[in-house]
Length: 123
Image (tube, rainbow, N blue to C red; front, side, top):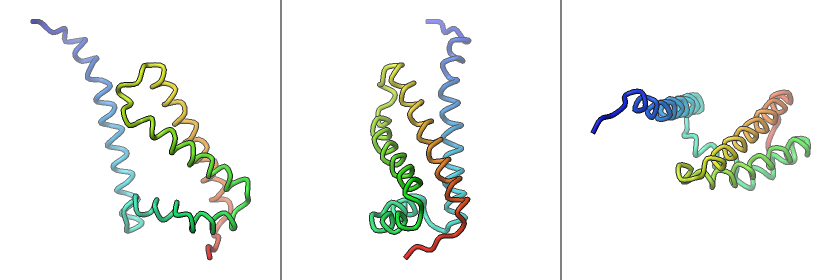
């Protein structure tokens, strides 16, 4: 059995890129946790707590809160599809990637609007 080294190398390229992306994700999470002094999952659970969301909704404009909630709901639905993404057909992988990119853009827009609001006191 012989292996064409160029095909072997080409096959490793996506795996290398996934490892790099995962490394960046871990570094982002570690940076957040270092600055905030708590785990990211704890912070997200606190942020997405229904009581906190209700308080949050009273403190920001309804359109910004609506954009935030729409993005979070889309993210929840889309993330469920990522569980076995390796088994998805090619077109579904691309569609999923596009959906995630759109969600990221939506959340970035919300973050920019929130930053422009300054400090808001939650009850």
